[in-house]
Length: 108
Ligand SMILES: [Mg+2]
Picture 1 (cartoon, helix red, strand yellow):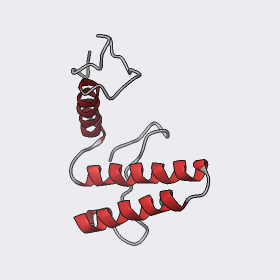
Picture 2 (cartoon, rainbow, N blue to C red):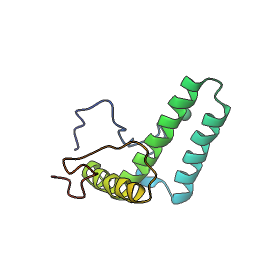
Picture 3 (spheres, rainbow, N blue to C red):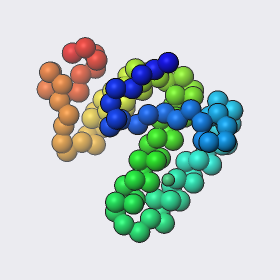
Picture 4 (cartoon, rainbow, N blue to C red):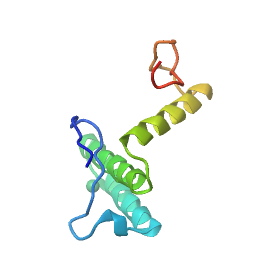
């Protein structure tokens, strides 16, 4: 069992109160993401929208976990995505590693 020591990162859910997410089909995941997206769009305040956006991140984190990306795998994946977005010039701010850019090696 993975022990999460930080409360500020998305923690994948194991069940939705009715069934295990291991039983979810891709269509179920799509429905969950769409449900949360609809909640974002209908939220009235920025704070409510922010909370619903975090729900989407949690659903996506849970989906990633369900298809085999544990916390280490998700970090590695986000490093890859950040490097890709950096190379495309999508950042006007920078999260710099020791090299001055996003480190390709997670130990850099
Ligand atoms: Mg929600």
